[in-house]
Image (tube, rainbow, N blue to C red):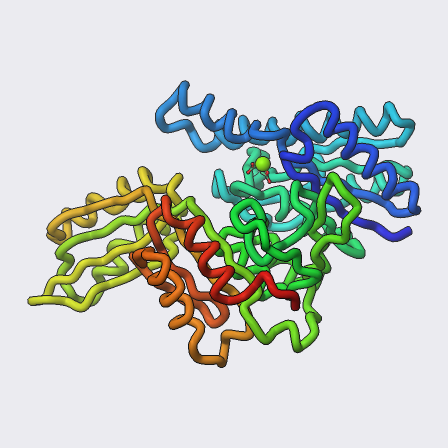
Length: 405
Ligand code: ASP
Ligand code: MG
């Protein structure tokens, strides 16, 4: 029998009726003759609610306790889905990340999967059961529970698809697929039939829909991933490695992300070792730095700015402040009200003019660019948060993404 791994997002499981709907979909897949492993996210905003609750108890919740707490969200949803399936007459079993054999490293809050021991899942499948796995979680060598970072159920699903050699991984969500831009921001946005791993990874990094690590994993093991709606039968977007050449010719999508904060270290001595001294403590506490800009130095002093996830800002400041003092920096500034807007497309790799077109479109909309960064197939600008939706709309238009292709 062919095995499919499915994943249902939190908004698809927000209440009891939706839980039943998801169970019906899983059952229908089973009726078509597939073995099914379904990964569930926590219901609705459960994870946010639990985080808030933890912070009302402690201003710095213990990371181990916080992960154990957050893991309960996914346990609630997967047990309910399993119950709903049984009510419908399907043999089903729910498993926590621990029971599913998902071993991770010990980085609480953003643990990476070390390996998966699929014995238990395989045994349940052999017994004819539909297996429902709690997403977003795993366990360490010492049997402590970890979580995989926000949106981590995507990574659980792809990792299981790899470990179980599934035919494909299906990600069910509240939109019909991957769009040229978020359709809530740009009503004319077009759904993409397909997209390659590389472009999807860049879009995900830039803020679109999926946890980037899940795409990295899918690309590495060449697992086809379909993103589609839980609530309709419209064909979704296929993420794979063989997109036809013509589709690579242009910008594929615009993405935005408001989870951005900037830290500026003022008056940093311009000599070897300073950047290392500033960024090492961030790495040590597991904070990833995104855009980095260092100004040309004036009289041996320079300003260094970088962005981190907004949720990491307090910890990032805490890590950087002592170093800034130590190296005699003139000051430390932070700004939380920023966002990034990106255009992505393999087509821009060797073609000139994309950056100019992007900057012109933003300028014409009167939007100031605070920082710029690029990869081979992505250009990202940091702008004020309150202008970011406008920026997305301006770029969607400038690159004519509403037109078919
Ligand atoms: N529930 C977790 C979150 O909201 C994981 C997930 O949804 O994938 O981030
Ligand atoms: Mg969620």
